[in-house]
Image (cartoon, rainbow over all chains, first blue to last red; front, side, top):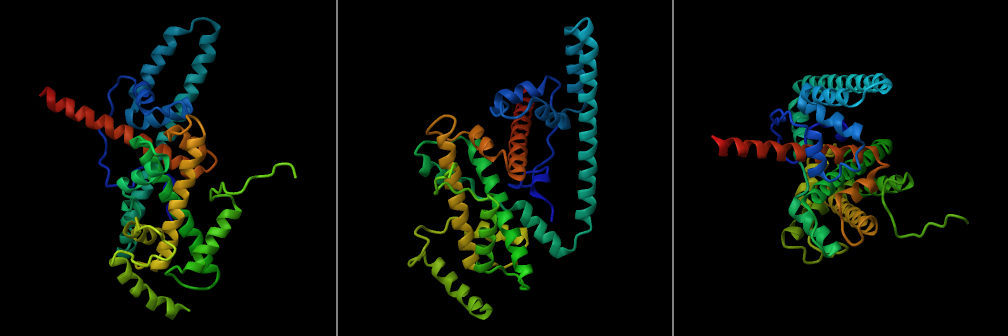
Length: 207
Length: 124
């Protein structure tokens, strides 16, 4: 089963391919608009942007770095820059390979598999209901990004529970559809692994 | 056991359609029944999952969202939920972390694409 974390496209709707981004540094623009640029490492952020902006970002970066650092540091800076470039190229190539492999895989699906895959990609929580739920808990309004993030994480959470329940079902020698006993055993196992947040019990650190 | 559970879902469906008069444990109306059914099918369950399983999942999801929201409210800027807080809470879970990063990146790209498209239209 394809790991949802590896999907390049969002699950909300069929996402059209975005046109190539402008040559003006998209990293700076994204860091301002995204707001969570502080959380992402600079290297990670630029790697993601490289997928969209092809070679334009890299050459712009290269020129800027060259102009700044004269002397001994230029050698080391150039090496670091080259490594970054290589890593970006490798990551781009790996992503392209992955996309190709996914296309080959999906083209060889049976009809039932296609149905299931379509449901997997397209199913999503309604943004309005999630927003209402979060706002009823906080009492204040929340931004759109929060709703997007929360729906996404919840879908991954559902996936984890369902997959674990299917494991339990198979282990007990039974067949789907999943029954409540499978779900509860799955939840018990996930709790033991700490994948289900539970802040109801105070943790006693030093017993 | 399986036979019993196959009959009950049909009755449960009628009850839910009536607006959940006797909800039992679910004190509020079911929020995500339809979407959760599609999701369960997508993740590997049968095409028609049991209603009780869907109910259990819905309760789990609501509890998950509630927990995350409470935790996010207690860190960073108190009393507010911000994306940075969610990303911080999720940092240890590789799948969720990667998923949130992807979603937010995609959203930014779409916003930029839409803006560029609108500007192009306005210019011409």
